[in-house]
Structure formats: structure tokens, C-alpha cells
Image 1: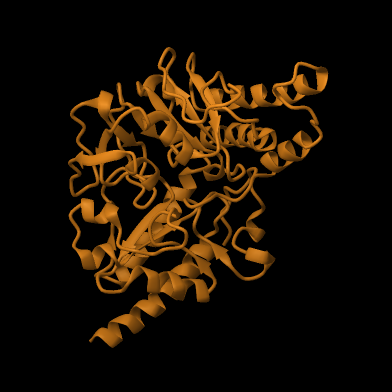
Image 2: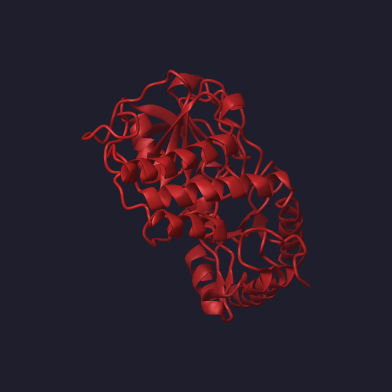
Length: 368
């Protein structure tokens, strides 16, 4: 049975799970989403813009117009209002741009890109919620990439990592009250290697990359015109899909997967199952069954899943996120993440469940 909601900009559902168009199933959307046709087309068109966007002649102005159109597309999709948007190479650079002025505080559940700039002193409860005491000095993610758990209360927050939330759940920068936010194109079906920092109107950050003064003097260097064009097209399409309710069937499919796994593997822990989460994310832990082992077993079975966020150059280790939530070392090293998308079909998800449960039973038999 196919997911009937798949009338959207990604590839068609019959291709959705096939790497190299053969037998693989891609269930790692939080690591990177498949490139949208709209983004690909915008990037191809931008290749013909020969001019440097900093040049004043007609060719340069044409390249600059592509950038400014994308800026408007992203600001509109993200509800930026009167704020500013600065293009970067990705959310990692963006975190450095916002936080390089001084040490911020955060919860230990933050993504490595933000965690690297912060003192992880904010308390995290068993449901993954972070308690913020001084917003002006704090970084707070909108959604966790490993568990999908959503945060709230962004008023005057120094930095909101909105990378995972953007395009999956309703979020508008203007009403969030955050001073700054991070975005990344490849999480919404745009190209890799392009992101943005969004700043509240009048909020300034120290320049991290100095030089020619591009991006209103905040991030020097010739802009990635093709990447920016793809980012803009992806943002516009992502907001359209969200507004049309395309992620609602995804949540239903995710819940069906979790219900089956819990029913047939009663010691499987679905992290954050009772919390408000992204509609597509399942973090599954079976204490003692190493996450890296599960990832390799699923890979050999034809399913792409992950153990935590894809930010450590292929390294698999204990989840800092789960440890911050109070899980012991064994459980924190035994979690995998399954993250699906609008083109993921029920057959693919249940096929994963079949493969995972078969290996779960073997693990339990060996452990007995």
C-alpha cells in the first residue's frame, strides 16, 4: 500500500525508497532530505547567471536578483517579517556567526554545531525539555534531530536552532520572539552546503568571515548563487507542503511503526513518545543492543537509518542527548533514529519493521 499523500515536489513514491533506483529504503530524512525537483530546476537555471553578484553591470545584477528573490522566498516561508536573513555555508557556520561574541548557555541536547559554542549548563528533564533561565544568553533548539522533541518559549532567546523544525511544523520567526535563528537548506529538500542566519530587526552580530563585505557586511565572500537559488525554491515548496497538511499522514505512519515495534518488542523504548515531537522522527532504544550494530545490520538489509545526528563524520557513539535526558550509558549507546518523509510508503516502513524485528529476536535469543 502506497502513501496516498505523496502528491508533492519530491520524487514519486515508487522511487522513494530506492537508492540507485533498486532495492534500498531511505529512512534518514533528518540527516538530509531528498533534493526537491523545484530546487534542482532553480539551481540549473542559476548556472546560466554568469555575473558576480557584487558586480554593478547587467550580468552582476542578474546574479544578485537571483539571490534577492531567494531571500524573499525564505523570509516569507519562515515568517521573518522585518528581520534580516544572512546566507552562510550552513547552520554550523551560522552558529559561529551568532555565538562568536561570547559564551552562551544551552542544554546538553543541542546539536553539536551549537553545543560547541555553549556551556551546556541548562537543565534537561526526562522528557527532553530544556529549562531556560536567562534567554538573552541562551541557545535553544526548536526541535531535536535525534528524538524529534519540540521545545517552546523562544522569547528573547539569543539563538534558536530551527533547522529541523522548519518545513515540518508551524514556526514563524516573527512570532517566536527569538533574536536569531539557524536554517539549513538540505533539511528541507534543498542543496547541501547552504544555510542562513535570521536576525531580528536591529539585532547585530559580530562578523565572523571578513573580507569584501557581502551579505550586508555580516558574511564576506562571493555568494553561492546556485545553492541560494535552490534554497529559496525548496523553502517555498516546503512551506506549501506544510500548509497543505502533507506531514499529517507522516505522523500517522510514524505512530503505526512505533505501535508495532512496542507490541512485538516490549523492551523497546521509544524516546519521547509522550512528548510533542516532529511528525517524522522515531528514536528507538533496546538496552544492550548497540546502535552502531543496528545501523550496520539495517544497512545490510537495505535500510538507511542512523544512530543520532549525522554530524560526526560517520562516527557512532553514545548519545549525548539521551544521557542529558537521564538515560544510562548502555541505553544511550543503544539508540537508533528512523526519520521518514512525505514520500515514504507504508510498505517501506513495515518492511523496516520486519527487518528490525527479525534482528531484534536474534539479539534477544543470543542474550538469553
